Amino acid sequence: MRRNELLSLQVRDIDLYGHEITIRAETSKSKKTRILKLHPTLMLHIRDYYKERNARHLKSEYLILSNKGDSGLTLEGLKHWTDALNRKSGVKFHLHLFRHTFACKLSEADVNVFKIQKMLGHTDISMTMKYARSLRTEDMATDISKISI
Image 1 (cartoon, rainbow, N blue to C red):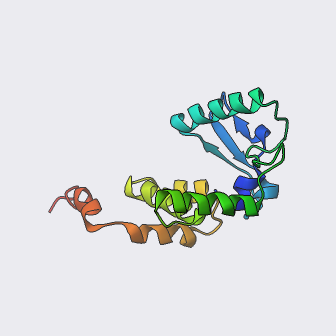
Image 2 (spheres, rainbow, N blue to C red):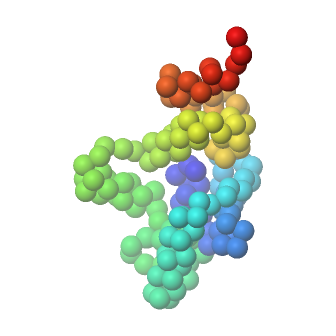
């Protein structure tokens, strides 16, 4: 998801039983609601996060909170987190790199480009197709062997 979509997430956007997250139209760049399935590992982390929120008696409607109280994380706070992770990890990255890596990994795993488009919330397939440039020659070896000559 995009950083503004992340910052706008609310507790109500997570469906623990359906293993889904809703990106609401009012917070989406495309102005369309999209629902994504959550990875089982992420589900475990979200449950742990909810336990911690409850233990601290936090009541904010926002999912991701500031360290300074029971309010949503701001863009400045997110930049601060990113800068701190850059320093601690020694790995230079920016937030959009996670979105790019997600799309590239899906593409490398032969996920249909239309599914990737829907997950990313792109209105134009040409935007999604940009991620196909990351395909390596070795990723195509099995594809070549599928044809009969």
